Image (cartoon, rainbow over all chains, first blue to last red; front, side):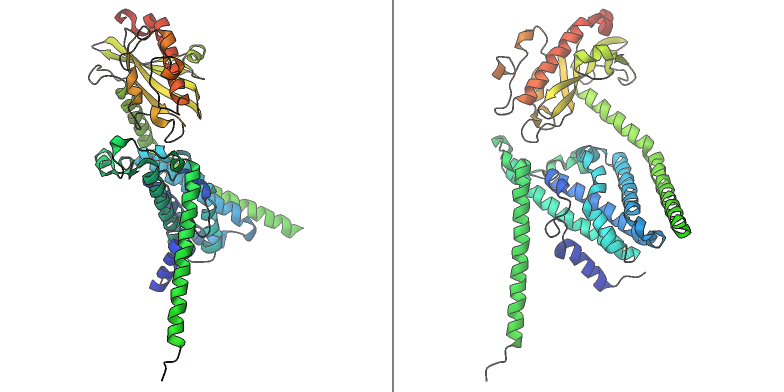
Length: 233
Length: 210
């Protein structure tokens, strides 16, 4: 039942970087494109998804020995739907303003293929702690993408950063909003606010991630070549 | 054959058991959060209503003092179903009404509003409570985005005349942002209709206050 430090590192690296759901697996595109008009919207939905993935992953791992092979999908979806409903009710009760902003995208977490994909690919074969961590780290990987994409679109589209933060931390947090472009200029770049901006932004993130991976691979190859070449006499 | 039936029954019972367990979990969560959710919704509604009436202008519980508009009349306010009018009272006298109205012809669907009206027919305030207008384009009708909606304060059917209850682009009185006139056009039109409704039902709404 225990989990080693190496396992934690591997699962975390896998979720946040190596198999990032947003920029590697390209899963859950509907919320990625629709809810990333700001950092707050993107990050909030991402955290809600991470919470659902952690709980559903742990639940699937805990109950997998009771699930007949041919009933895997309906039961996993049942578990995910129940977890999402519980998260939705809790958000409506304790984070009402944010719940109103995220709206239909909270129940739609059920249909986000990354949740079922991790239940099927990981949780059904691993322990409870590992599965919970895998779900959470995959969710955090998605959250990072949603937040960065939201940030890009918010800065380029509206000239602000952290708008709507008061919905999470209350009215006093209104002062945290950063006006990258002075508010009195009434700056707006509609293209970035609308869905095409999300496609462009996501494309840039995917390309950026691929470029970083390529650079890291080249550096590793160079290091390997240096260590393997015999020193000149 | 027997094995197939047995497997089918076992599968059905397993699915049933899972359904029961998770339905119980959801029902439990619902029971725990039900009162908080109801209070949140009431608070949100009260806060919105408070935004369309001047602070301190009433002393009653608006949510308790409400009139239901029958379905036939609700159509005049753009609503599909029975809607509510909240009556604001000060020392027992009606000092205003908050009307649920809908602009059915928004760019991306219906725009639901709360309209505060004084007994003399003057607009006390307007708030959009629900809309699906394009972010960054038509959503400036929302007070959280811009103060565009505040231009209606103090206006009435005679100020401007009903035929001037249009956006400037259509030869009317009211401002709209360039390149995004569908949403404000819908709001202005619905407000005009709401004021016509109030004028026709003055006695029923305000009694002797009007």
